[in-house]
Length: 220
Ligand code: G3P
Image (cartoon, rainbow, N blue to C red; front, side, top):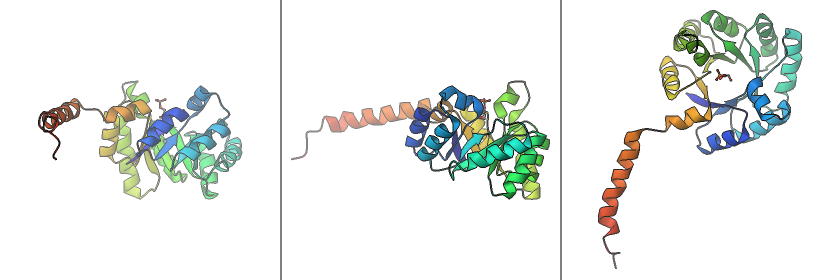
């Protein structure tokens, strides 16, 4: 499974990349707006920091405008994957841009029907949102399972990117379901490391070691 960071914050990205296990970054207009810098500047900076795909989302709403904006975003850096919303205009833009060799991440996916259309349009990635479905008492993980199954039935190459991830459990369940990618906030990634038995076991190892070797005089 590829692990992406879902942030446009350069400090968070630096901390994640430093761990050596971050494969890419996803952004969205909300995340870019939080940083307060021009989109192009922020995306170029992120592309220089990671060794994988960097999703940059259009803010246009018509296919014609998305196509123009998508071409411009794709030209910023070879790592850029252009994000478009799963709307009729977004699917139209995906069909056109994918034929030009632009890689598309079709986002705001909330149903298997939408995901099927994204794959048919040639999407490089589809982003089903787990957390926002859970937030309204729907089953976000069932969406992941359904999409993986549908794509496998027809050999679609579109990658399933589990998005709107709220916990390490979301990551694990998405991995069990076969999602190729999970994108997560840094705090969720950092929470994946934590287990009380690891801390307890390490403390015991070091106590046992120190009890013997710290008291043993240095060998002459
Ligand atoms: O960036 C796409 C998605 O991961 C956003 O998730 O947390 O805003 O529901 P969230």
